[in-house]
Length: 360
Image (cartoon, rainbow, N blue to C red; front, side, top):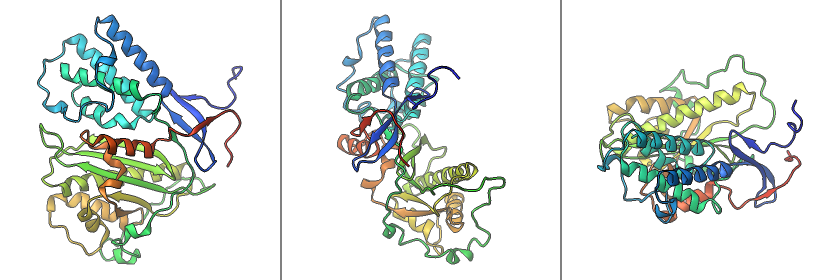
């Protein structure tokens, strides 16, 4: 072992690892991309200067990643030359790693711009610079800190009033459904964890091909663990269809996470909760006797319902104003709404404390 290699962790894959004190006095681990983002901003400033271009401060006021009226898919500015394409791909790669380190407040904008990696335009590169300007302007007050809070959140059971009250109600429709046994998994030890997911879809949000955008946030206890945003592979004729596609993806992600935790020997606390803001989708997936009238959504329909019949997930309805996954589907979301969601997810106001260990 190298001298000084044993001690309290400070960095992991470019992320800052710190202990922070929560509002109720507890001490938990946290992760942020503050140093990585700061270094990235400095590098971009040097690139701009070397290219004889103006600094980042000319790329807007930094209030949002890029203007809510800008749509990359219908940008008709001139195409970049080979050097510009290389620079664009390089900067997108930097931003995507910042997202891996927790900067989910830029994930939707970067996802939309990533769809133009092969043939980017001048307007796309300007939008990338605007994202860096946003990070630069807000880094001190928004370092993007995610706290790994082990507390199990209290969930309002009234959100699942539409769900079948017992598994027996599902037996008639999915008699063979069940939570699969993980062969070779170690004996579960330690405190059980609870899994919750937020799902949303921006129906027909892409103006060029009218594909929808999926957004998913998955929490383990009170810690954000997984985030996903991607353009859907099909064109859906209704928000019902696009939300069902998103819900099917979330179901598979939750199942994969449950399997991974079981293989780590982590006990899971019962059924995982999935929150969606489309009442029709929640009803069709939660009520055993409900009938699907749109046959082209049948695969997603049965995939989600079978997971509920197996006791793997349960789907509950929440208002759109409370759906955190809204952050991962829309670039046109109002600034104050976006800020409220960001602040509810990040733990930016937590007090960073020094050495020692985190109590159990």
